[in-house]
Image (cartoon, rainbow, N blue to C red):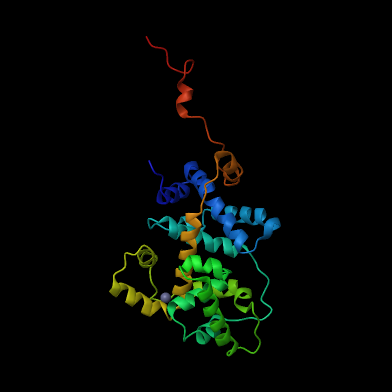
Length: 267
Ligand SMILES: [Zn+2]
């Protein structure tokens, strides 16, 4: 039987060991990859990982509170936000706010804006090309155009301006949800090719001018790639994390207690 992400969330919320064991084995590798990508550095990675695990273990943490049956991708996208929140990158030398980015990049298409946004998420052209199914050279061309547009709107500019401000821009975009914003399900339908032409047009009309939705879409694309590459930990590898999450070592199967000696005498 397949143990789903929905069952894991239910079990974790109920404090059952099975849920936390599954979480440790299946999501620690993804957290590690996110920490490495977003700059925890090898020295800080173990510590940051522990902080994330202890944070999500808190009974009041929102990650396990949603009552919606959560598809795994939605869950991992939420977890990603927790991971990024645990990292405190240095403040950018030249600050850049979301309003300035939005105004500068207004002439770009939705796809071009996604290619630029993935730069704030620290994805170089080659990886962005994989995520958006686009040639890396095209990504570079779009980013050069975006750099010119931003340069025209700011007093001081640097080549790494978007990446340096990535964390702050991501927080601003996540907080900018509006009533017309698209639901996770709409995005998953789009990613899985279940959207009708009409639905797609409607979605694109909104998303093309909404940085909250652009950020959301880019994070889901990131999650799809994370899951594709995910390798669960072995029992032994997961053990320290299970202990950290307060789950006792895997118990021997319950039936062993009923082996000869423990079984009630007949007659
Ligand atoms: Zn939106």
